[in-house]
Amino acid sequence: MNHPSFDLTGRVAVITGGKGLLGRRHAAAIASAGGIPVLWDICDLELAEIQKAYGSRALAMRVDITDSEVVEKAAREVAKSLGRIDILVNNAANNPKVENSSGREFSRLENFPVAQWDADLNVGLKGSFLCSRSIGAIMAEQGSGVIVNIASDLGVIAPDQRLYRKEGVAEKLQPVKPVTYSVVKTGLIGLTRYLATYWCEQGVRCNALSPGGVENGQPQDFVARLSRLIPMRRMARMDEYEGALLFLCSDASSYMNGQNLVIDGGRSCW
Image (cartoon, rainbow, N blue to C red):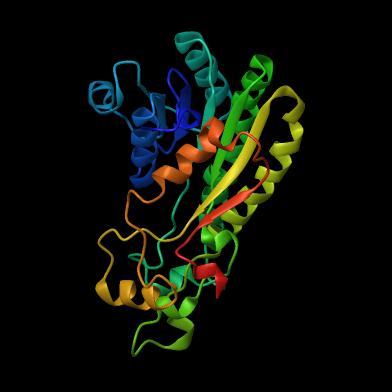
């Protein structure tokens, strides 16, 4: 029997980046506990498909989270339609590629495009700020709410650039994990601490979840390299963050605030 403190029956949860790999897993986890997922994404989402997957009250909305007016309007629409907003999962983020069609040097710090920097921070940090500002204010008026920021183990440790090395490629052309990923995820942990104390007296908590890498069809040599850096000797399965997310969204974590829950198979211990 499920523990009652994990029950989310009737609670409304806005999930940004809802069309992405983890966004859909977050929605499934929340729906499985009785919650009502509201998926926001810059891409179109089919409402019928979302309601079939996550329940008849689930919503799908096209929302540009980098536009403050759009975010404010969407937040009001959700609150009006469903009566309240109980949970915000700041999940949306760009994941800049290590390599792209312009060449492997794209990712290196010396050549990383300023336009890409701006785009990545706009989505990952500005977007999370705008969503937290609008939805957090609604929660504060209600007297309760939970914000969960999806950070990363790379918000805690530096990327190990050896994972991306290519044989026979000159040093200055070696691909690396782009700088913006670490900056955004580290920034989200800082935002978490700020929000945790800002509306605390109004009953709004904020914590971060920092996942490690999820195995999802990456090249086997990359998976093997990364697995050697993890004490558990493997990457995460797609469903292995659902319990942690439910913990952070529910009353099971009612006395947890301003913390960063790292689920990385032990990688950051080394």
